[in-house]
Length: 171
Image 1: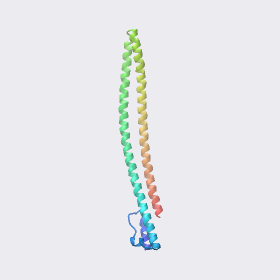
Image 2: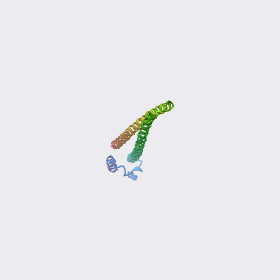
Image 3: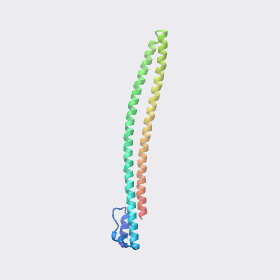
Image 4: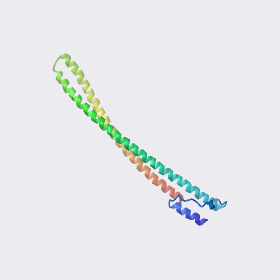
């Protein structure tokens, strides 16, 4: 019995937790039975821990994939918004040029043009602010993607450490 238990311990120390303890030893009512049941419990617990770590790793991988896809979509949307903002800015500049031409006519038109010019300037500032926000969002998205990759790397390291710790416990 001790030789069989020793072989089982060696198998577990090599990272193989798929084998089961001999039930005939586990049914014994002496120290060998206690030892066998103890090893069996260790084997079951470490197997559960490894399965949980693997499941969590897959969950983190899936979350990273989803986050990466979301970041890509967000980046695309930011580029569209930036393009729209540039078009809007160009249109505002056109409006400003037309306002200057109309300004040469009458006093009443001058007041109207002054109002349009003020609004055009506000629009340009607003467009510039939107463009800045879009760039800020792009930077934030890139930072989030880097952070997600760091989390994935850290989780991989933690998984390896957990497996090594589990092996160390077995020894």
